[in-house]
Length: 317
Image 1 (cartoon, rainbow, N blue to C red):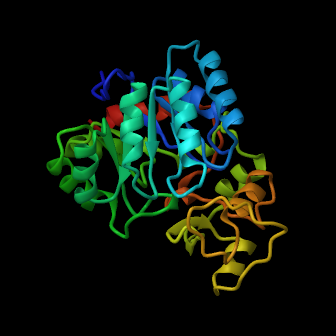
Image 2 (image 1 turned 180 degrees about the vertical axis):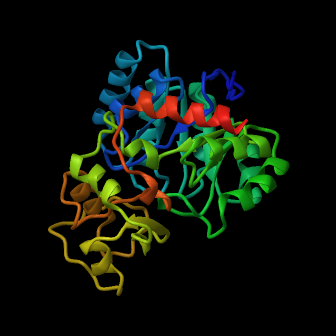
């Protein structure tokens, strides 16, 4: 069965799956290239890494895909390095730029200047229409079930029909997408494809520390909790010592401030907490994950994950 209906400007992947950009250091060249080689669209997270490191990972991903697969870059709008990393990625001629947790009008003009499609992550029909007006090539509509920073308290499949009706550009469904039947439901509703993050963390090629991946396997239902990050948004992370520490609003002392955010509550350091977890200290940092992380019970090669999902999708149709 052919599931190649996802088209975003020059990108025509074999499978309708975009891998979500996950920082810091969770989705770099290893994961992005593996997803691209398996027929999807890979995304490098440019949040929390230097311009030089980002350039290196873009080039490495190109080598791993032999320049054939589609590779893009995600950068969190809230970080100070947003403009520098976005422009560096565009100079490297990535296939697309994607961003959320805020709204940047500038990135659309940069996209036109460099000839790079821009995709916005939105959580409402209103922002989807604004993104389309600004020149977005597509929008990712992300529901409450997603991991990391959240822009809504509404479920994906409540928002999705409103966004599809509101815009003419491709709409990508995200948040709680884990199996083939989830993709089938999104496509049947009119989505052009889906974005998946959490399932790909539990893969051999994911760039995260083994202890980070093990947190996903050990997670039980109810262990994915909401926390208020210093960005000012709710985020979903796996319950650990650090989430217990910040749940009462107590300020967490850190060695030094990274000055990473445009606006920060300074209760703790989001950058520091993410760097700790990605280095393997998973009890003293944030381990972001989607609401259905407890359903994952194995770590597999990306190709095996994609093959399994597509078999489920065929059965669902």
